[in-house]
Image 1 (tube, one colour):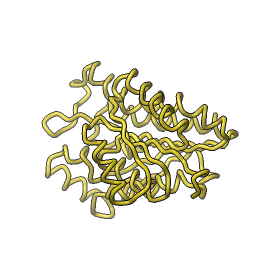
Image 2 (spheres, one colour; image 1 turned 30 degrees about the vertical axis):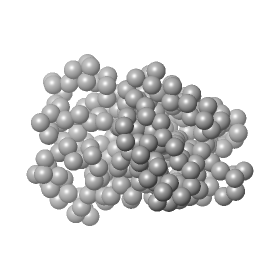
Image 3 (cartoon, helix red, strand yellow; image 1 turned 45 degrees about the vertical axis):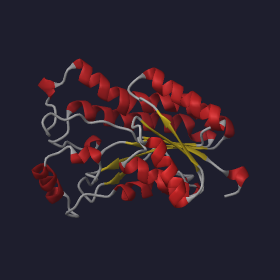
Image 4 (cartoon, helix red, strand yellow; image 1 turned 60 degrees about the vertical axis):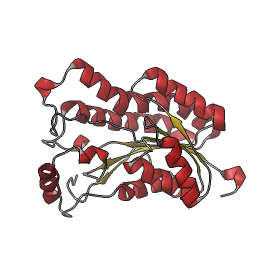
Length: 254
C-alpha cells in the first residue's frame, strides 16, 4: 500500500482483547491506526505495537459512555488525520453482579443507560460523525462488534447487554442500506465466547460450562474474531455489506 493509499483506521476498545488483536492485524495490513480506549495504558499499547510490528499507530484515551467524549474523539481523529477510512466499533461493557449477570429485576435505569451508551450509542454517534466523509470519498468500511447473544437466547447474558447488541445489528442493517450506493460497507461480527476481559468476569465454573456447550469445545481467541474483521475492511470484501458474521465455534448456527 503506497503512502497515497494509506487508510486511516479507528478501533475502539483497542487496549485489549478483540480490539487489540484487530489493531495488530490492520497495522500489519499497512493501515494507519488510531487506538482508543478508556484505559490509561492505550498510549503505551499503541507504542508497543509499532515497536513490534512497525508502521504508524497513535492512541486517544476516550470515555465512550459520555456523548461529549465520543464527539470529541471524532473531532480529534479528523484533526489528526483528516479523515477516517475504517471504523471498528468494538468497545463494549457487560456489568456483572458477583460474577453473574444482572437479572431483569436488578437492572436499574442507570445501569441500562450506561450499557446502551457504550455498546450502542457510541457506535451510532461515531457512525453519524464519520460515515459522511467516507461517503464523500466513495470508500469506507464500518464493522460493528455485536455478540452471539444477539443471535439467540443465552441464560448468562443480561437484558441490557443483549438489547444493546441486538440494536447494534439493527444499526448495521440500516447504515448498510443507506451507504451501499456510496461505496461504504457496514457489517457486523457476532463473536461467541472469546477469551477476553469480559469473559474473565465469569466464574471458573461458568466458563467451564460455557466451553462445554460449544461444539468446538473451547473458547475462541481474540485473533480469530480479528481475522474476520480484517477481511471485512479489505478490498476483497467490497461486495459484502449489511451482513452479520458468526464467529462462535458452532455455538450458534443460524
